[in-house]
Length: 106
Image 1 (cartoon, one colour):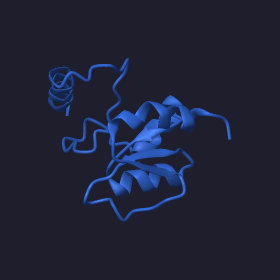
Image 2 (cartoon, rainbow, N blue to C red; image 1 turned 120 degrees about the vertical axis):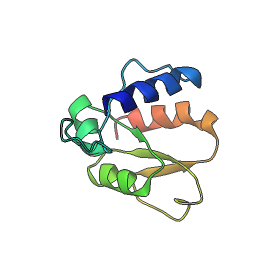
Image 3 (cartoon, rainbow, N blue to C red; image 1 turned 90 degrees about the vertical axis):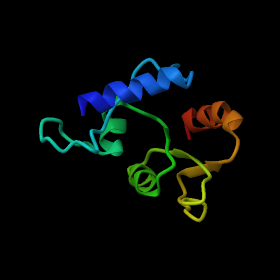
C-alpha cells in the first residue's frame, strides 16, 4: 500500500495536478493487513470535507448518504446515477463554481 501511495503521488505531480495541500488514502486495495481500509465517507468526516469529487457510484452514494455533497464527472458508467446531493458536470472548468456553491451554507 505504501508503494501505491508513492506511485499515486508521483502521478499527481507528473500530470501537473499537484495543487493539493494534502492527500488522504483509503487503502482500499491494501491486502497485507498492515494498512487499515477506510471508506471515503470516513475520510471525509475525519478531515471535515464539505464536498467530494468522485466518479464511482458506490463511493458517491455512500458519501452523499452521509450528508456530504458530491461533484461527479459524467462518464458512461455513472451517467444514469442520481442522488439529491450529487451534482454532475461535464466540463472540468465548472469545478471552482461548483465547489463554491457546495461550500455555501444552506
